[in-house]
Amino acid sequence: MESFITWFMNTIGQYISKELAVFLVSMVPLVEERGGLLLASMLGIPMWRGILFCVLGNIFPIPFILLFIKKIFHWMADHHMSKLVVKMEEKAAKNKPKIDKYGQLGLILFVGIPLPGTGAWTGALVASLFDMDLKRASLSILLGIFLAAVIMTVVSYGALGSLF
Image (cartoon, rainbow, N blue to C red; front, top):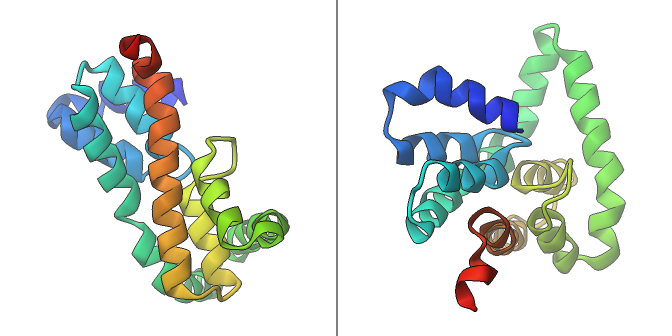
């Protein structure tokens, strides 16, 4: 993740504001809010401002994934990208039991606990591909994004140290 952030800041990041850089990094799959908050901290953006831009950046793509990923996958399969579609569907299927075990709480924890392969993108992918209720999935993903923001703020900004 650090190499991606370094590359981003040395290329695109030098032409845009720090806040826009954090917003955009938080939209990137796999990097998401985790990378955005690390970047915000590295750039010296005040904590609450960093959280705001990261959360907004992480939330932005979620409605598109929930509403359109099946159509996008269909289009990709029709345009010689079926191997990528199969890989992403397998990833979603692999993670579905983790979410199913605890229902809505499972999706919140899946999105919120910053582990490799988890996050809002994958949570939305699973929710969409397996036809979870849109409102419940959206709320769960949003709560998971907030949970990830709390955890990553503690890691990125050392918020616990500033409280004592």
